[in-house]
Amino acid sequence: FYTAAPIYHSAPCGLSVFCIAGGDADLYVASKFDAEGFLADIERYRITHCYIVPTMMVRLLKLPQAVREKYDISSLRYGISSGSPWPEDVKKAMIEWFGAIFYESYGSSELGFMTLISSVEAVEKPGSVGKVLPGGSIKILDDNHREMKLGETGSIFISLPMFGDFSYTNAEGDLGGQRFQGYSTVGDMGYLDEDGYLFINGRNKEMIISGGANIFPSEIEAELIKMPAVMDCAVFGAPHEEFGEMVVAAVQCGGTALNIDDVRNFLETKIARFKLPKKLDIHVSLPREDSGKIFKQRLREPYWEGRGRKI
Image (cartoon, rainbow, N blue to C red; front, side, top):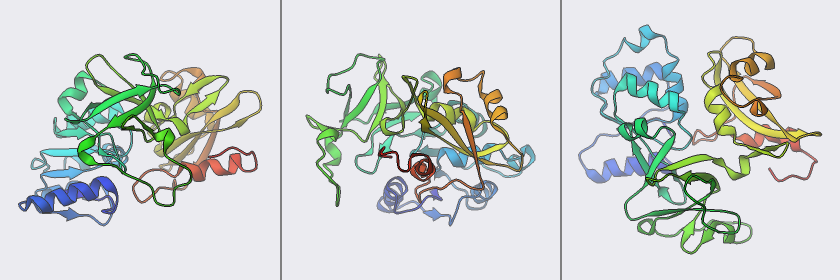
């Protein structure tokens, strides 16, 4: 089992413990993720199982074809991803390359693995993160805790009694907004379809409200990362006198100069015009938590400083 993610983070920790508890799996912990190094490790150690996140997959897919074909990766038969949204095109490209070996899980440190979807299901239900694990249940609720209809977006509340309860250390206030009749939320928004598959639109606290329209950054990020010159990206809201908020794209480039017109031209046929970024920030590298998630708060802070908004 291969992982390059920090072991103290919930998903790689849990999966690594499963390997040790099973007693018949070798655990390989890479000191950092390197795209070509990952392929070389599969060949060298005959890796069969791995945990990799979408950012790692994007870096793999941007390798030259000659490098991708250089290594024997036939031993790999199971991969799992969690922690951040997995763009449909990236998932499709990884399945075409490695085969239908990937599973995606929607999870959190508080509740553990909450849903699971296989590669086969992902082809049939593009964009979904799967069904809740056996024994659990999902409710989609509005701000007044009323249950939403199928296909309607609301806050995702999940009950997983087999994993037990949780609490926060040094938390301010109570968890009233996060708990309802035995269900808990970690702030994500989404909807259920008629077959019980969950689709996630984004995090409530990251939603951008521009001109009265709700914009989820994850939709824009999923398209922007496909731009050849973009190595990494994050989208967030910043103050705008007319619209309330504007869309800002922060990107790490791969040696090619970019401007806002380049970005807007690339995105204009892929997302609605009102979702197009109005400002572009170029970074040498984007700030990331040890878990691999981008520290969006650090990117937003300079824009919202002194404006009284909690970010």
